[in-house]
Length: 290
View: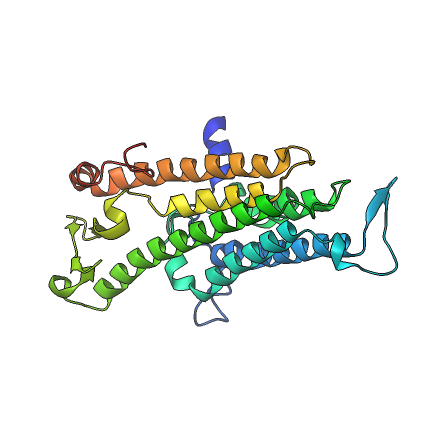
């Protein structure tokens, strides 16, 4: 059927395609490489390029970029510097704590189709850069006087990044402890004995700490970070930040769609244990809201 062909093209048919079996002891995992290396690297390079354009006062005249002969840091927006650093740190954190990310939905469960191939090495590269640093570099009036917005946006980003890190690492530490054969009767979360559901399938669903508040509580940090970036890209006397907010809209839609895919997969995998889990932790992302 045509619909199945489109679905297979968009979502993919192979989960972790591997290459060079004959020559490598551990075959090359194409999806893991594609997800983490080329696109994320070019994301950083793209942000730095836009900052360089601000530094040299580059403007488009016709179809050509015209830049000053000498650079000036007073042209560079602090918001662009903060966002570029935030993006760099996000990618650094991804690589530094890579074992924790290898348990996420897109690595463990999503198939390697058009959604991930173009998303990771096409859409991400140009859109993620342009939404913030690119947007600022194209403003006619330099964004160098929005001190209050920059401060508020930075505080929101720092709090969101902290929440994103501690929630993910809490679950990762729990899984690692189990994998290493630890005694769960001695494991503590927030100073209390850990609570969890041991499924018939064999998995352990954490219901303590952050994960007692919502089943995807870690999404809050991810969803809030981009709001901080968008706020820092605005200010009195400047146009409304439609492009940064378009990224926020896209990212919220993407994350919530991923959440529903994950919930559907889990309901099939865990069956009645998933019902018990949703009863124990009834909220999806935002406690007492959704």
